[in-house]
Structures are given as C-alpha cells and as structure tokens.
Length: 280
Ligand SMILES: Cc1cc2nc3c(=O)[nH]c(=O)nc-3n(C[C@H](O)[C@H](O)[C@H](O)COP(=O)(O)OP(=O)(O)OC[C@H]3O[C@@H](n4cnc5c(N)ncnc54)[C@H](O)[C@@H]3O)c2cc1C
Image (cartoon, rainbow, N blue to C red):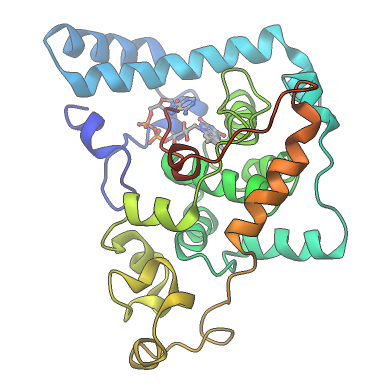
C-alpha cells in the first residue's frame, strides 16, 4: 500500500493489491480495508491515500448501478448516457474476426496481446491494461463495448457487474464520469510508457523476447535484420497488426459524431488526447 501510488500503473511490477477477487467473493471486508487505508493515510501515506481512492471508486460504481439500473439489465446493458446508444458499432464477419483476435491475444499489438494472455491464463488483468485493451476494442477496432464486457465477465475471477460495466463505459466514453470520446489511446505510446523495457510483454509473449526494448512495442516497424535476428516472421511467429491506428482514430471520431452537439465542431487532435494519460 505504501508504494501503490508509484507502482500501480506499471503491469510488470507487483503494484496493486490483487484483493479484488477476495472482495468480490466476500472473503475480506471493505470496511476493514478502508479502515487500514484511512489510518495509514492519516499518518501521511500517499500510497494509502491513492489506494483508498480506488476503494471509493468501487463503492461509487456500486451506487451508480443501484441508481441507474438501465446500465445493467440482464441481456440489455444500456449506455449510462443514452445518446451513446446511437453509436453504430462495427458488425459482421470482419468485426467477428477482429473480436476473436482480440480475445485470443493475436492483434499484432504486443501489449494488447500480452494483456489478453494475462487474462486468459490467470483470470486477472492489471487495471491499466483493462483500460488499455477496452480502449483498443472500442476505439481501434470499433467493436461494441458490450462484447468486451461480456468477455471480461466470462474470464475475470474478480468479475463485478458494477465495476466491469462502468470500466467498459469509461473506455467507450458512454459512462458516468467517463473519458471524453475523442480521447483515444495510442497503443504504441501507451506500451512505451507503461512497459518501457517490455518486461510484461516478454513474460506473456516469449515469442517476442528477442526483440530490442525499442522494437518490442511495434514489431512491424522493426528492421528486417532485427526481426530475423529475433527469429520472428510477421504473419507466422507473430501477427501483423490487424488495424492501422491512425486510420482507426479517424473512423472512431466519425463514429462518435452522433453524440456531438449539433453545430459543434469535432475537436482538433491534441497529443494529450492521443496519448491517453488519464485518471481512472
Ligand atoms: C474495462 C474494465 C473492467 C473492469 N472490470 C472489473 C471487474 O469486473 N471487477 C472489479 O472488481 N474491478 C474491475 N475493474 C476495476 C479494476 O481494474 C480492478 O478492480 C482492479 O484491477 C483489481 O485488481 P486489484 O484488486 O489488484 O486492484 P487494486 O489496484 O489493488 O485496488 C483495490 C481495489 O479497489 C477497487 N478498484 C480498483 N480500481 C478500480 C476501478 N478502476 N474501478 C472500481 N474499483 C476499483 C477494487 O475493488 C480493487 O480490488 C475494471 C476496470 C476496467 C477499466
């Protein structure tokens, strides 16, 4: 808890508490945890203060679901902000194929794939990566957040309807206190920022282990010699990227046009929006 504020964003570190599953199944009391965090905060712990804030997000999302039950009606989850239900998500064979590749960790974007493999092999995914892969599914692949939400429900040991739904709607920008719709994570920048040495990627993607710290975030940009030395042929040992981020970004802004107030101009892209550093 003492180091939480410094370590929580880096998936290669044991930064979070991993207590979600115990909270979910009633094996530990939220009051006991809040008390411990609150006491440590009073003694000046910045880590405890940040961690207590996360426990508060949990309680907040419970109350959102309680007061706005339309977001979680079984079989008919709706956007917290109704106008976001106007969005037309990508459907059909190509969307189904992309969804399967996302689920299997075969998108060609190493940190997305490593995160999905963490989920598929352990029933857990680091919070930073939940935000990251949810952004990728909705804003790079243009796939309905409800499909990702359902996949997480099936895989997560700490699955909690309120947190999961609000987490997905945060990424899709349709939720309560969500990120703005024009904030679109750049998957390569995010990878360099939160897994700079590729330690997390290498752990879950041993096939990429031979790439340099620079190339591991975007193998398709590596020089042919570097790929050869790392024994990687794109399309064989590792996937080609299934989507071009810059083109996807433009399609996403067009897709979200339906939620823009009439007459309001679309936002100019700014580095902060593409970089996606944001509070959760
Ligand atoms: C797309 C998406 C889906 C999510 N699905 C779930 C889910 O099904 N179940 C779930 O419990 N959490 C979910 N979260 C929130 C968060 O990712 C997990 O609670 C956290 O990763 C669990 O790991 P931990 O116990 O090590 O967390 P820690 O970082 O140690 O946090 C301690 C506790 O605080 C609460 N918490 C932390 N972050 C959040 C958050 N962003 N929102 C709400 N509560 C939080 C959790 O109860 C967590 O166990 C989701 C987030 C996103 C972006």
